[in-house]
Image (cartoon, rainbow, N blue to C red; front, side, top):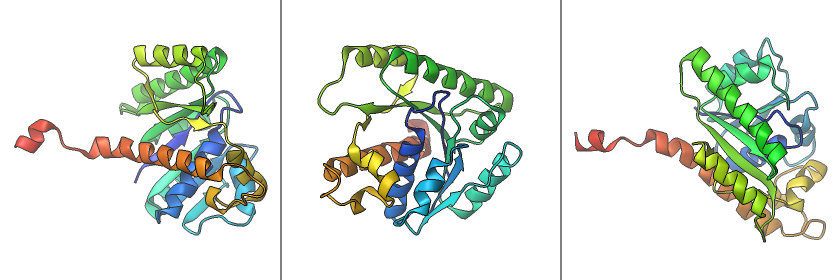
Length: 231
């Protein structure tokens, strides 16, 4: 089953938020999911302590540099999806987790500083590919972007990634109050109180678009080639 790793050397890029959003949306669709909380601040674990965590979503927070590969392998045997939320630094734990990934998602905000940090994560993925002699797909996820406008700087950064052959999600995790609110109130987006949080519907739509695009990454890999179809 797929193991999805969220990684960025820069803190505050939206790793934990994106991991929880993806995991909770998958679980709501009836899929079993494990989120491995490998961030020392344990944001996912703190969210899960609040009411409303989906039943099919398991949180594993007892993980160290020495055990991360074993924890990932055990979770792969138990649930359909494994999501790893890594610490915001380049470390051996990050490298070990990447080595087990079927997809590495690199959240970044639309600034040159953040883009430079995202490139560092891409380089780390490439180094793990060489070390383990396997392909590890990696893709950039823009976070905290505006639904109304796409700044010229961000457009330039997107073009730079594409020109360099770096994959970029079409879906962006927009700046939504609801994405922050689940860490305050617990539960999933659709359970938030519209009297307390604005535009929940828009946040849910954004989250489901992101989930669908993540799933599509694995559907592409499973499709046979044209030669195989003809044969």
